[in-house]
Image (cartoon, rainbow, N blue to C red):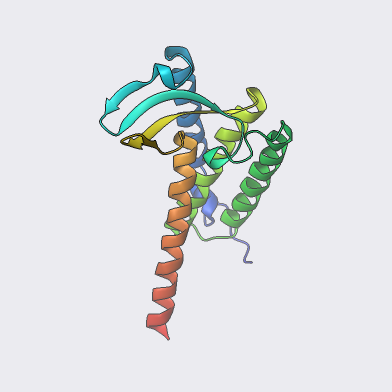
Length: 169
């Protein structure tokens, strides 16, 4: 990997990670201060969307939520490891590769937002509840959204990179 000056590297985009983190933590704090816990206390916003304050002891889609507590530390270690790896990659990626650097920063901010919840509360606070009829998508939060958007941007960037190398060859 090439070594770039800080101003030339993707770290130029790292400011986005603390912004995502702050928005995530702020939204969760607002939910905890203004809403009662549980699906019975949902706030209906749209015919397919509620605000619902719930706790997730697992990972995405409540994966391993009933595992007994060890998963809290596993997911914390994963969040730190992935964030460190993405920050390293950003350091070695040129700043003009905006999409990939923004993706990495969004994932870092989201991972650290959920890490904060795990370390402070012992669970992640979720509140965005989308549904169709009686079928509900698992509740999620802004950190989860940033991670998903970041992952989608990485996939999109890989397709764009593949197309540009095909055009050159």
